[in-house]
Length: 402
Image 1 (tube, one colour):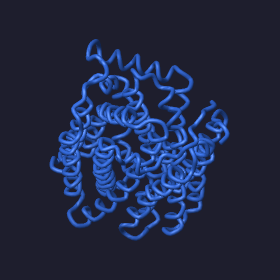
Image 2: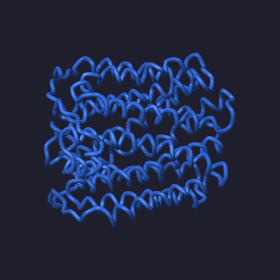
Image 3: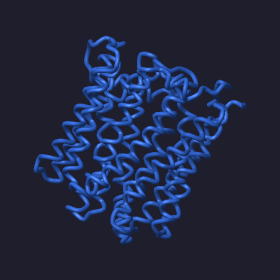
Image 4: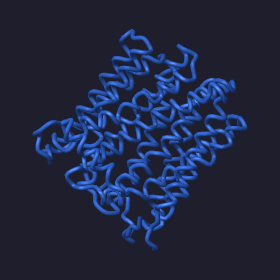
C-alpha cells in the first residue's frame, strides 16, 4: 500500500487551539484515568480473592473482549444518534458500573459479567467521539490529534495507576473503584455541558443490527480498511497479553509490595515518550516509513522476560516496549482516507472495539500459557507474537519517499 503524506508538520499548539477537540481531549483523559484505576484495582481484587493468575488476567481484559460483538450489533448507532448524548451517556454508564463493583456484594463471576455487559455498548460511544475528532481535525492535524490522545492516554494511565495504588493502599480495592466512578461521572458532566449540540449524520431508520452487520462487513471486506484495522489491532493484542501478566509476574517473583504498579506504569510511560518523539519530531513521511520497525520495538524487549529479570530490568524492558506503540501514528491518515464518510463513526467504533476485544483475547491466551510455562515465558511468547505481526506489516506496508 502506497500513501502520499503531507510534508508540512502541524504543531500541537494548532491542534489544541480547536476548543471542541480540547474538551474531548480533556474528558477522555479523565475517563482513561478512571479506566486505569478500575482495571488495576479490579485485577488486584480478583487476584487477592482467588490467587489465580488466569482469573487476574481475565479480569484485566473482561472489559475488552465483548466490544467486538457490540460493534457488530450496535456500531451503526455511532452514525445515527447525536454524538454529545452518546459520549456523555457512555461516561455515565461507566460510572454506574464502577459504582456497582464498589458497592454490591457480587461474586467474582458476577463482577466479570457486569464489566463485560457494559463493554458491549462502549464501542458506540467511542465511535461517536472518533467521528467528531475526524470532523474537527483534518490532514496532519488529525494525526497529531491522535498523537495527543495517545499521550493523554499514557499520562492518564500513569495517573490512574498512581491514584489506584494509593487508593487501594489507603481505602481498599472496592473503595478505590468508587473513586473511579466519581471520575467517570465528572467526565460525563463535562461532556454534556461543554460539547456542542449536533445532529446525527445518519438516519435513525431501519434495523440497527442489520445496519451494523452491513457496515462491519463492508469495512472488513475491503482490503485497505481490513489491513489497516488488523495492523492497529494485532501488535497491541499480543503486548496486552504480556501487560496483563505483570501483577502475577511481580507476585510470583516476590517483588516488593506495590512494585506491580511501578511495572504497569512503565508501559504507558514508554507510550508517552514514543508518541511525543514520533508525533512531534518526525515528518509525516518518516512516521509512515517507520510503522513496521516501531511495531517490532513493541515486542522485542518482551523476549527478555524468559530469563526472569528483576524489578529494575523489567521496568526498563516494559518502558522500551511501550515506546513502540507509536507505530500506529503512521497508519492514522491512511485509515481515515480509506473509510467511507457514511461509515466513519462505525469505523472508529470498530477500530476501538477490535483493539479492546483482541486485548481481551491476548490476556486470556497468554494467561492460559502460564499454567504450562510460567509468567516470564508467557510474556516472552507475547513478544514473539508481536514480532510476527510486525513482520506481516512490513510485507505490505510501504510509504512514499520524503
